[in-house]
Amino acid sequence: MVSPNSKILIEKLLGDAGAEVVFDKVLLHSTDDKQAQIGKPYVAGAKVLGKVLKQARARKIKIFKYKSKIRYRRRRGHRQEYTEVEITKL
Image: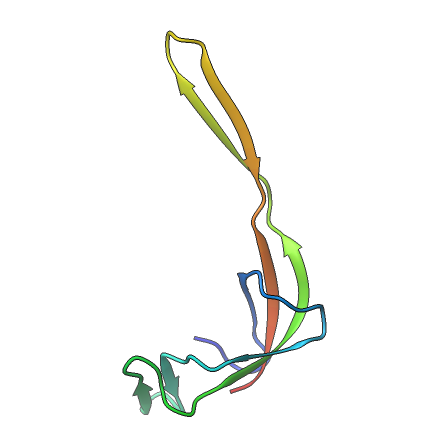
């Protein structure tokens, strides 16, 4: 669930900082606490507008594979790229 002026972290999108993004595949839309529209599969006509704040990379995670008694060791690292988006309008 998002609301205006909230910030979300999502998988990397194309676009530089300051670019506008439109999310048109909305699964659930709620006007207040008592009213909710559930899509089948998406809510018709619903859009969420946002602005890209930055493109960044997450902290590094370490992957270590090991098999005992056969001298097999592999060490790798991975940094996932993500996009920080500020929701401007629902």
